[in-house]
Image 1 (tube, rainbow over the protein chains, first blue to last red):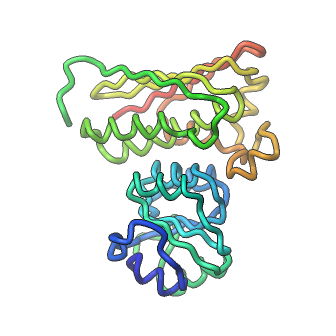
Image 2 (image 1 turned 90 degrees about the vertical axis):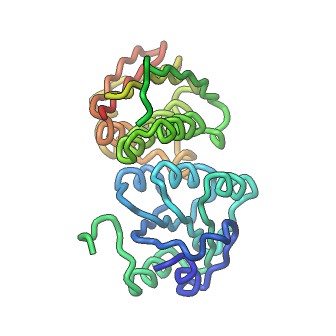
Length: 118
Length: 143
């Protein structure tokens, strides 16, 4: 699915890097613990999180992730937005909870790091 | 990959009182490796293992320094601090064991995965620590 399709599925707003809505997303990860995200690094293209601090963008950068979705209606700070723009990482936010947001994406075919290659 | 006539040496100071800036050294080294043409999988392994080490220095040791030596066949990273030291290195290497204060968990770390992640992604992890004096972690990633 693309970032644009993810926005529709999650009823999400885009915060920055609007030019990336056509970018394809192949894998997902949902967590508020960044070391857990780093531990299960695969070709995960989108990170769903409720954590609001710049290390979310750093973690995504280290893993070459393309998009971060802030769940539970969380809004990133200006510092986070500027860092994401600098690193070319698209930011979205949705009012859905982590569980629901991950479930909606899974229902539409997005898989996590532990899925067999599809 | 770009030809290197001699090892590239880089040095970074990691401030300890600014969690928001943690990761800048890892980001810079990652970009350097990409520009030099190292394989993406090697760049990612270096980035993750180094980033975990950099975060550890900020959380536990009040910051420190990072020195990188980049050669075509291997990347060596040395993280040195003057923090409190690690009392039991073997215990610290266990997944889930953490001495991080509670507020660090609110920041998304402190799960006890830092050293285990470094061991997972680097080919060699060498830890030397003296209580009350500091810690040196050497990471070697082979290309």
